[in-house]
Image (cartoon, rainbow, N blue to C red; front, side):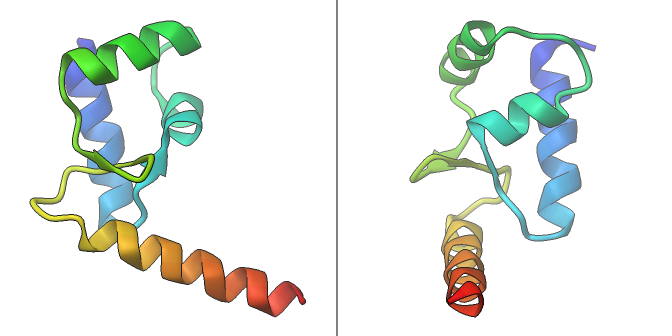
Length: 79
């Protein structure tokens, strides 16, 4: 598989759980070895959809807001 197919497959999997990924998470779950710089270059080259540092394949950005809200709730539980 090429980069674009791999990144789409990874993001689609996490989109099922309504969980967009940060660049480091995408790198961690990427199915093939890739350097940080290769990941960054390819994300920009292929214009992978992102908002506020979260990557996803949805047609809008509501999923990013949901993740931020969930993260906020989790951090409040830790207090």
